[in-house]
Length: 419
RNA sequence: CGGGAUGUAGCAUAAUGGUAGUGUACGCGGUUUGGGACCGUGUGGCCCGGGUUCGAUUCCCGGCUUCCCGACCA
Image (cartoon, rainbow, N blue to C red):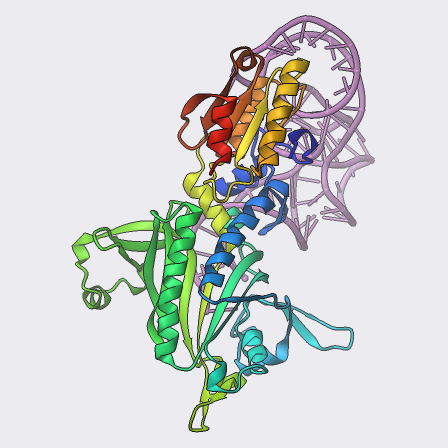
């Protein structure tokens, strides 16, 4: 993509109404646009990154047998009344509205209910289980206080997967696979090292749920980490009893702030029973389906990456989620020879399938281009200039480390295309 | 939802009971050209409603907005 055609622009100053690092940098770099408190639009660069995150998650879900669907945002209140999650006294963050005929509807806060009801049309025998369905879908939550930029919004993208298993053992087997899948997601997104599987309060079907907590000062949660074992506890279950049960020693636990970047949960028959999702076993008996839920918010994950990896100059994206792999920065483009050379490199790289953002702006000065490049945070900056043209070299800068290399055109192609 | 702030140009800010200045961005002219360079010039603005007042962007009341602290976050 040519930067001269990109409709977004960078800004030197962050908006006064954003304090969160993620919002400041993402807005300055032109990745997101704030519509309202807690509601952000994803712009061309931001959407590319968001889609990369989504794709990583999708691949890992598919690998474990997940089948992708998209459920509706608009929700029928009836199904939620059956599980007693419609009443404002029970769940207070619904956006509610009604149809012209008076039927009461809401915008989905999560999708256990409709997913369970929908599956009841397809599951009737033990032969139909287990099954796994998931989606990427915008959730709406009428939070009393949106904050932390894109980390806690009123409308946000969520991946939610549900497992439909015959019994607890079958569910647990899948749950364990999901834990590993989640680890792979965070690893691939570039924050595996900072992300801990964390014990948290469970629910009626299990003592614990597990959260994926990414250590960051921007976090809202307090966790206690045992660095030797890599086990962590959420402060909500930080008791002597739990510590002993997990075989940990209190003195070894280090308190840290962390962002909840994912969650896996045992649901048991909490939804299948009230919604009538049962199957016939081999003896012909009706048995409620045993369920679990698995959530990751791609938009929150994007914010987490900014919080954890961004520096004073701007965004720093891991290659796997960067909007482009290469930021081709053209200097001295008023010189037609340099321009032709830069265009040739752009054509060669893009022709070989390399994602390139080409800063082809003729009027912008070098300093501005470098600052923009740092802010936008693409992993590799390739500088084409008159100086470089004269000795046949490109300057290649790695954004994350600041490493600078001088490569010939051939070395450049070897480096970026061969893999 | 309780408490505290806030609202001036696309963005960031200043002053002011007599209709507002600066930076940046943007347009034009020129000098520059590897880290947001410079000179000149121009366009562009007081959240909404009510009250006080000869006169309100300014003071008062209400609303809304946004932010912060707390509560909440299934």
